[in-house]
Image 1: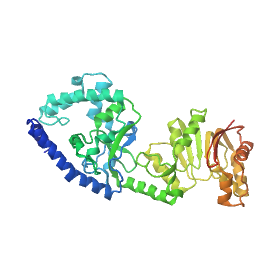
Image 2 (image 1 turned 90 degrees about the vertical axis):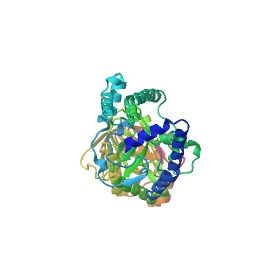
Image 3 (image 1 turned 30 degrees about the horizontal axis):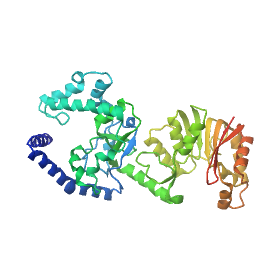
Image 4 (image 1 turned 180 degrees about the horizontal axis):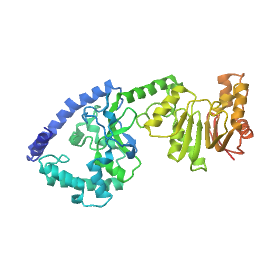
Length: 437
């Protein structure tokens, strides 16, 4: 059926004047009376504000191919259950990937690649090859791939890729772009698995080129999300609504979750990465929340441990870690219960706005001093509270309420650390110090 459809379209295109205009009218009618109502319906039933949202992701994170037999247009913005996301077919094993590697990595002429050999064999048997019905059409498309490779190498991907898909948005658009309908989704499309993995759907040549050029980020849109992933996403949204300001304290670090409201992103960990003299080693994040600091430090070469007492946040953290293919260790414990009979040795320790909670009672204060005395580290990044804010929230009954200067000195006096630097003082009275040996 697909072969017949393409043959009819190609014959119509060859009819002078009438053929091209006829196809143009058909595309407009199909756009406004078929696709747009479907997209509008998909956006409603799946609670997606923008089902055509562009996500910029690492091309190397797309390892496997989706086994979902979903329509590449009409299923955009939907969620589906089933095992379609468990396929272990690797993108790097498909013929297009191997063929483009032969062409651009090994420098072979197209006719000497296995990709060309496989495609021409299909054509000889009467089948389509890359939507082409003869060798001349196929070779012209290969020339287009050469042009595409040069363009992406020189210019990267479009900064505003939305231009390529506006024509199919369910939102109001002018008819001036309707002629672009045939280009819709002519770039990288993914499904999202139950674990949050991006699975390849369409745009294989562009994805292969991005991998060959080792690009950091590429634009993709999501076709289908697994229902289990949508459930996790909704759980995070629900949790955000229970928090102060109805937002997460820390960013959910996955490309499909970045729109969930949050108070803090990578700015603080970026400040730490810029300040540290260490390039690798072990790191401990105390009060890790969702593990964003460990996620970023792991990318920088550290072996990380994320300590989080709250069990729900710890569970969210494990799912986010797995979705990002991180390997840092998660520990759902208080610092006082973490290896209580051992000295703790880490190259780098992060404690952002957590230690002041141990000043509330004398019991916790003494436990905290004992913890500091068994902690061996080269650097600590200390987030210090605003004492006025602390007193207002917990009253005058707290055991201790140090000023930022006093609290940082208290840490130095009770630990192996000897020096301090004020890295940043915020408008809300909080500070970040670098303590080191």
